[in-house]
Length: 64
Image (cartoon, rainbow, N blue to C red):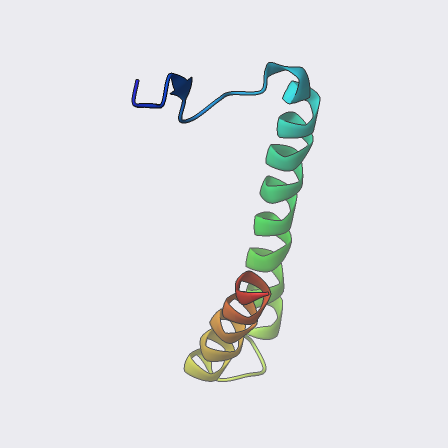
């Protein structure tokens, strides 16, 4: 493990395993909802336009 002046550079907090589980469940649910939304809207909107908006939204959310 890399150290910085005798202290561990990266520490794993084992007290928040419940938070990690909740984040994984939320991520899976949001991915499934996003995929379902694309499939539903894809029947009415051109695929390239739909994908462009989808990834633009993801970029904006992750950029914040």
